Length: 133
Image: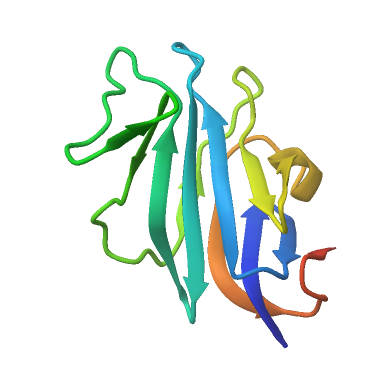
């Protein structure tokens, strides 16, 4: 078994053979990109660092953020998570899932609108590979 992340949306399931990934999205009103870098350890997901590519209404970077080349960088002080739940919609741009130095629309990994969960898990795939179940 290979460590990685499991994604589920309704009856659809996918396994990605990576222990580090970036979850990225564009704010639906301000059109500003957010990026969060996670690491899977055992059965937990740890948010290591994050970036906001600008600021806007209700999107101020947290205290301690550093502005570099127009991008706010910060390290969130958050306990590890058992899962991430994403609210996906046909009315807003989808999330991007980045791993192995490449970002891809979430729909390429798990093609469904509606709630999608991401959890640390083990599965059968080679590093960087996506296995749909």
